Length: 286
View 1 (cartoon, rainbow, N blue to C red):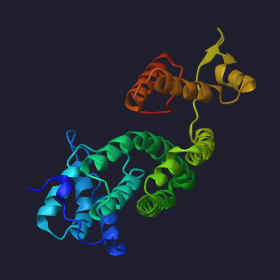
View 2: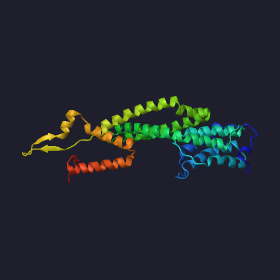
View 3: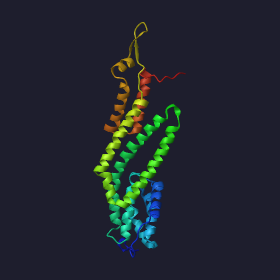
């Protein structure tokens, strides 16, 4: 078996657009192929590199040797991490042309980038972009309209496809400079702008869809209501209970690091107790 540095590099080799496109599609559709806690995205990554290696190394033994660089653990944000696959294709092309790049260099690059891009991608995609799309879709679904669901599906598919395709080929073209755009000053400005838009959308969804009110009323000996708590709260600060519940959820998840699932469980318990003591009225009739 040849060592990594002994892979034959007789002619200059260049990846064509067809090979790169096939590699991209294998990542796009199979990034989470054979996903497990032990390997995460390793096998999806290896699958996306197969067309690259077959194109660059016609000899089967060279292909087997080259693929060893991609057997190490890999896990990142599937969308933003696409740029790493593109960079890898560029590095593999340089290695096949005889440049001073080996499997360890490629692995070091992957290991160094997958963590930062996972953090940026999870906050940017899962924490910002998806809530923005869902907020818009909810607004379009008022009255039971299916337009909101259709909008979300179409918008997400288009953004995921064209966004990942752009990142893949940008990573191949720019190499490590593509990462500098994502994690540098330009990337920080873009993330901040998207975050501001996301906060506006989430705030609009909160004002339109969340409405927490109390049914608590105090009556006198004659049975007449002398204190309607909701009316008093509305005269002081309309929507006060909604704001308090929102900040309570934010405090649980942001400051106490309570998961979203447990936060929902806590809200269910609060609602149940509130109904029992008469603070909330679900409006149910039997």
